[in-house]
Image (cartoon, rainbow, N blue to C red; front, side, top):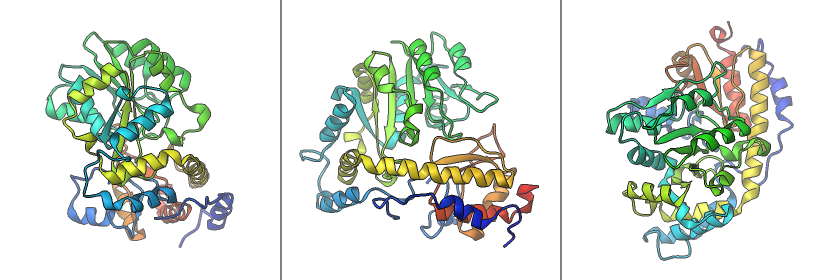
Length: 386
């Protein structure tokens, strides 16, 4: 294998600083438009999945044990038991110092993002979103209401443009969606700027939905305390999930926290029974919330692998965005070609830079060994480094 421009030993040395947490042990992207051969490859556990931003280590051992011990309850609905949606709601409320009527569950955060469309998107231009983001709410509005959603382009630095968003708000605006950190860029907003934006925009007539799917992976000092904004009666809706940092993507447990009035509106459009969460998901989520050391261990481990990735990408001369998440947006010049040429290496990616950034690929951060495989693979592609 050609090693010009990339030294395998150097990468191993950079990775030697990684401390492997003993509690972390190894264990799709929405792919409805992909052909069967692609789905078979991308879905294989034998291949390296660098496209769904999953926790590559799986949930903690405590969570796995709890799921196993309660497996005999899969014949029961998730009610009338010590592990129930009400129990989970109570725990989340206690952790965040809010009332239980300020919480709603979803089949992952995806379902909640769809609820936003049905709740706030019935009028023309009533929703504002970044043009490059996790585009569920806007795409769903286009599909079911067949009218425009205001999409605001990112800044030259590929940040969410809060100033332009603010200027775009009219009396018709019912919802502003902000993904922080943003997907697919991985960049987060400055806490003071987001706080100022919310205090000006999150009024009784306009809800600011802050999608915090990757919030647990941010450096603590960079985070905005959105819960405090909620307690101060600003009309914010905070959306979170157990799919990413907690390693529970397959169990589909998401939730949102907001004012009791906003949550009541979402319930009116939810059409679900207990948020469509099964017993294993509830047991896993309850246990995961207690296992705080696991999430912190994963955050640090992910940060260290990401730092190694950054150094190696710089050595290879590839542009990338600084990320606060478990994925990175990289300018690969030809995403389709890269995707095809990674197949022989057993690596699956998915084009995700969007129409505004067609040469950029969002690459999930896997284990150290997986990222070594990825970097060694792209090092063989002379066209990528030219």
